[in-house]
Image (cartoon, rainbow, N blue to C red; front, side, top):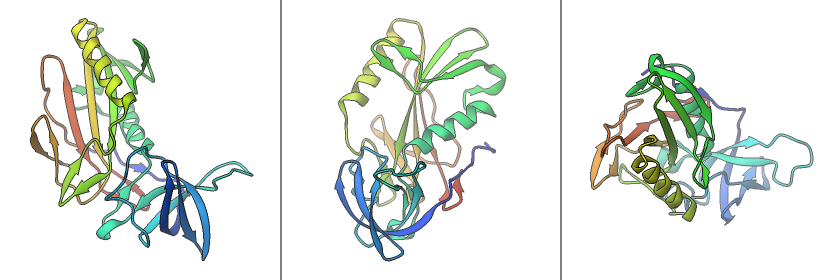
Length: 228
């Protein structure tokens, strides 16, 4: 599929120094140590390391406590996107343009961001040409080892609840549940899902697993200017 690439915001080169806590780290920019926001809840054990090259995105607004967010790192010479919102931007752009594999644009009647169902929100809702509702949860994957992408990096109660609610949505017969995994690093070749390893191909996706379920995965070639 073409047209899924997205441009990144203006980025500042730096050196990653250390992680302070779940959402803050230190980096060096032009010889100065600055605190930066880490826009990913994962452990990032294979994505960040002291002395590693990184790119930071300036945080809009004067007087912000953290002037940058950690956007990309380069372990082993391979780019890794840290910002988990990039995956959602990619899916949003696909919905605006060509649609999703198995759900092309010609079959989409309308779509919305952050729909409510049950006790929470999901990333996207799509209504297809037959009026069937599709609830979509997007998972950003930036952890890998020896060419194998790993998910989840850090299991969360919120993430587990979303999957349980997607399963309940499916059982109720209200529509179809999707989980889309977007792998945001260059050195990952496979993503183990449902007990087996699935090759990651740029902009290509998996087949449904289970009645009505769609479980997809995609790779993204990344660099300081954008990914796709």
